[in-house]
Image (cartoon, rainbow, N blue to C red; front, side):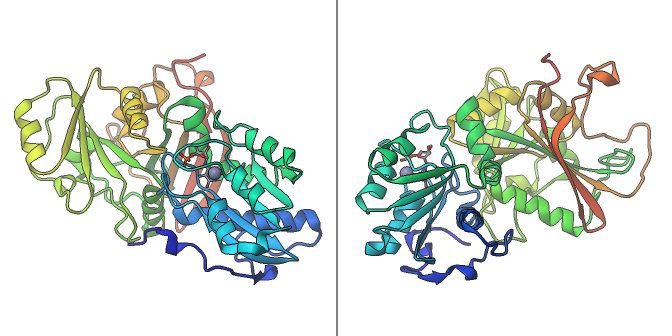
Length: 396
Ligand code: AOF
Ligand code: ZN
C-alpha cells in the first residue's frame, strides 16, 4: 500500500528540464502562456498523488521553476501535514529566490493546522507566483494573493482554472455547502435495468468499467449502500485490484434486517459502518459491534442526515453505490451532486427488474432532472455517462 510520508515527495532538488514534464494531458506547447499552462498541469499531476488521502483538505501540487528548469516540486499529502508549496520550497532551497512558483490553489494566508504558505513564499524570495484558482475557503478567499502582491510578488491567477476546479470539485463543494460532495454511481443495461427480475446482477458491465469503479472508490472517503444491496449482492466495496486504501464502507439500514454473513462484516479488509435509526434492534447492533462493525444511530436516518454526519467526520466525497430505493431519496434530498452511469450494451428486459433510481414523484417528462456538463466515454464494451445534477427533485 502506498502512503505519503514526507519522503514520498519528489526528490530534491529536481532541476528537471521542463520538456521532461510527465503531464498526461499536455505535450509542451510554445509561448509563455502555454508554458505556464504546462507547469500548472504538472501541479495537478503531483496533486493527484494524494487522491483520496487529503480530506477535508484539497488536492494541491506545486512546482518551482528557475531559468526554464524545475528546481523543486511537492504536493500536499494530507490534513495536518505541510502544504504543497512548503515541500516545493524545501526542495528548491536557495534556488527559489527569484524563481516562479506554480500552485493549483491560492497559497493559504491563515494559521490552520499549519502556518500560512503566503509567508513562506515571501520569505523564500520568490519573484512570481502562478495560481490555478482562488481558494474558496473563507479563511483564505483572495487573502493569500493579496499578501503576495503586497510583498511585491507578481501574481497571475486563473491558469488552467477549469482543470483546477474539476480536480478539487469535492473540496469546493464541501467548503461552500458545508456538506461532502455526493456521487451516485450505477451500472445498467441498455434497457435501464441494474439486475434481472430474479435479482441477479453480477455482472452488468465488463472488467474495464468495474476497474474504473474501484478507482473511483479509492478517490472517495466513504461508499454507501442500503441494507437491500447487502442482502441481494453481498458486495465487498473495496479497491482490491488497485492495492490502494479502501474507503469507509457504509450501510444505511432502518430495521437492521441484515444477513448474518456478509463480506462487509469482514472488517480486517476494510472498516464498515452501519448507520441506523435510534433504538433499532439492540441485539443486532451488539452483534455487529462484536464483529468490529461500527454502528451509529441517527435521528432521523435519511441520506441528508448521513451526509451531515459524514461532514462532521471531515469527509470530502461520498460515493452512493446503492440501488434505486435509496438512490431516489438521496437525489431528492440533495445528497447527490454528480452522477456516473455505466451503460452495458445488453438487454435483460423484465417488468419487475430493478432500475437505478426509484420514484422521484415526477409526473411530467418536462420535470426530469437534467444533468449539466455531460461527458460520454467508451469503457471497454460499455460506456460511461457523467454529469452534474443542478437541482434535487423536490426543489424548484
Ligand atoms: C495551500 N496549499 O497544499 C493546501 C491548502 O488546516 P490547514 O493548515 O492544513 O489548512 C487547510 C486549508 O488550507 C484548506 O482548507 C485550504 O483552504 C488550504 N489548503 N492551501 O495553499 C495546500 N492544502
Ligand atoms: Zn498553505
